[in-house]
Every structure is written in structure tokens, then in C-alpha cells.
Amino acid sequence: MVKFTGYKKIKTAVFISGTGSNLKSLIKFSKIIKSPISINLIISNNPEAKGLKLGRINNIKKKVFNFKKKYKVENQILSILKEHEIKMICLAGFMIVLSKNFINKFRGKILNIHPSLLPKYKGLNTHQRVLNNKEKYSGCTVHFVNSKLDSGKIILQKKVKISKNETKKSLAKKILVQEHKLYPKAILKTFNL
Image (cartoon, rainbow, N blue to C red):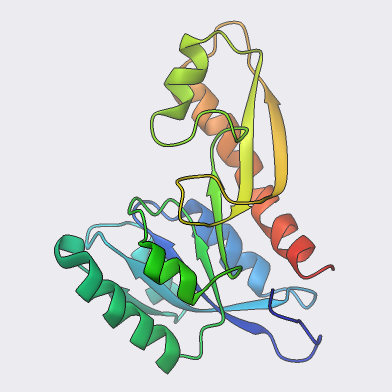
């Protein structure tokens, strides 16, 4: 992992596909003194992603890519990351699975947040699957990204109790509140802060 000296913040890129609510909480976190990161770049695969507005509001550079030619695009992104001296990546609702080649270039420096208690319920549609299986708890997990989907080393998890009349929407909302708290804590933990 990248060392944080306490003087210079680690330049970080956040990858998003949607509303960017985790991006918003990471931007807020990056502005506090004890935060080891600064957010210098937002990358998205979706030109309509609401989270891109946060780039404009917070004066953070943003780039949108069409992932049809994945390897070509990933190489372009790697060049941009190098150009902006990005040392860490936070995936926040990014709906593209990155290639092994890309991940290897940033080994141990890519974090992701997932809306379940991994290793349970990897992939998509987690809340519905949790409810279908009548689980008593769900939650969220921040983990390092490796080449297998949602399988990297777990950094932190937060458990959430499932209510009697829980719906997919109410569960998602409940977990999202915890995601916004967990991601900054997990980043501090990766830097041993």
C-alpha cells in the first residue's frame, strides 16, 4: 500500500457509474486534515452519471469513457492516471469489471465498496438476493480489488439488521448510509491511521 507521510495527500481517482453518493462522501472526507487522500480525478463509463456533477461543483477533473473496446480504453485510462500522478483508485458504484492487466498495474492500490457482507452475495442484485434468502443481516464491505469479482482481501465491514418488512429499496437505503461512513474508515485503516 502507498505510504502516507502526513504532509502530502495521495492523489486518488474515483471511478463511478451512477449517482456518486459514495463519491460525495469521499470528497467530503478528502477535505479534512487527517484524510490521507485528495481526489484529483473522476472517471466514469456513463456520460449520464449524476455523480459527474460533483466534479464540476468541486473543481475535480472528470473523464468519461466508452468501454466497448475495453483494453484500448483501459490503456488510455492508465495513461491519464499516470499523467495526473494518481497513486490510488476508489471504485464507487463502478459497474465495469476491470481487466487483470489493469488491476495488476495498480495492485494493492484499488479499493471497492460492495453492498453485502462479502464473501456472501458477490456481483449484482445483492439486496433482492439477501431478502429472497431470508437473511437476518446484510451490510457493506470495503475490499481490495483483485482479478476475481468481489473477492479481494476485506478491509472493513459493517453489519446491518434486516427489518421485518424490509424491501429491496429500504435495505439499499439503510446500507448506503453505512457505506458513506465505512469507506473513509477503510481508507484510514489501509494507511494505518
